Length: 111
Image (cartoon, rainbow, N blue to C red; front, side, top):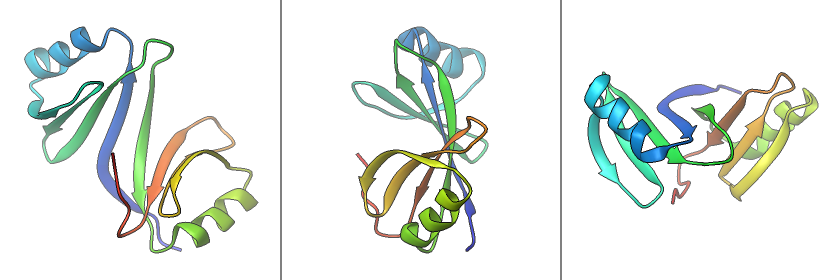
């Protein structure tokens, strides 16, 4: 199974509007799109999604896989847990060490 790093990183932040201003005005992230609770930026070819979450702050990466089902078999055997199943091709995982990451395969739909 090949886990290909996807150039998408999501940051759940407190103080969403202040955080968006910081990443745009101070760090120079380029604004791509703004939605109600998520702002998409790009910086040096990496896509960053600043997500509004007043309860916690966290960061997660994304990996594209050939088969989410096969990837889940491998990851669950290593004590990873499924945090959220968006579809059969789009799943949020937490590894045994606390890191969260998103796996998806071709044809996955994103909200």
